[in-house]
Length: 200
Image (tube, rainbow, N blue to C red; front, side, top):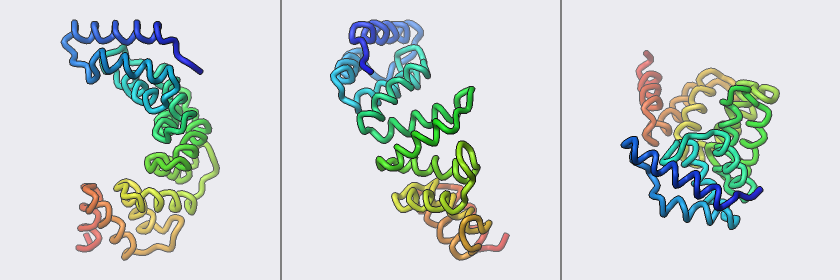
């Protein structure tokens, strides 16, 4: 799928003008946006991803989830794992709650090296949304996320060990992973680390 450069430039630049008129400061300048449109149209997946973020956040353009999804899909197809993750997130939290599609793109994202993709896929396995519930698989994915220094992944492992879901219940391991989350600046990790150490 390829974008129409002229159409995209027209929409994006008009969005920048509207933002200025309404006293909204665009994150991206018109010149930067033009460069991204042309680069995306030339097949540069990273630029498509950046444009997707602009549309999703409404940065100087009218906010448009559908356009963001189209751009994220182009980025994902071009090998940008974060594009797959963002697309999965849009499917997961869309009005239709397309969980199976979310799982599909989280799998691509995780395989491509996106820690957030692995974490989100772990949550899908934990909750049983879009696939069969599997705590063991969820732990495996949270571990991958935590090993990549993702605080949320470490935090989830703390809960899994404390509750004994997908792993042998272990207060020591729960403290260990809450501590890792805390070291990675996750306040919840610090709170739970202190809670388990004090017995409160």
